[in-house]
Image (cartoon, rainbow, N blue to C red; front, top):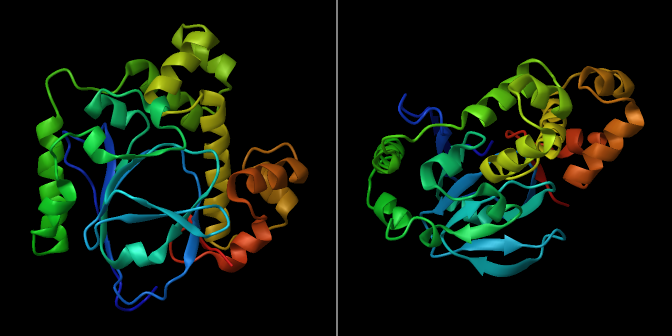
Length: 271
């Protein structure tokens, strides 16, 4: 990691914990400019550029093809997106729990699927980037962001019990969608509808992303096992299934990932 880089991640207050996984801040004014793949993780984020009046939109080939607003809501994705590290001069963000964005903003998450939407269209008058730019230290910025989020929290805000139970069963019990639906007492169709509206994608797609992320974590830690063994450990049928899924989500193979990944497991240098 660049010696001049500052990165801070803060756990949310107990009040926000059911909706928000983490608040983060990054400042890297001297980072060498390049493009990076950001791998899908099944979560939504809010990203705020605190140093410039825009974020850079890039195509999958790495070419900058548009300017985005300085504050955006990033929906769940099934494929990587490309970012310009010039935007890392000073950023802050909110990483939501699955379903957390919908609980706070009362917006259907599936409407944001594979899209980046101006935050002003969702949180009218918030002026988050402008407000945080006026706060002196990284920790104070995150505390200010947490305070502003807390003001959104209202009586009755809570994570969907159905989605919460499904997430638990997928993560901890490794149930299939059919098994999960039976366990929570709803039809597969009903489970898929609620999950898609709350989380942003169908439960089957979310489970595929979760399995992919299990493999990404292992590779990022430098696990030294044959791909066939890693595939079985992560829940794939075989090495071919693992390789196809990995490429579908990341655009690269596991070997390329291992050679190009950096300090953050979901960021990979685009060459």
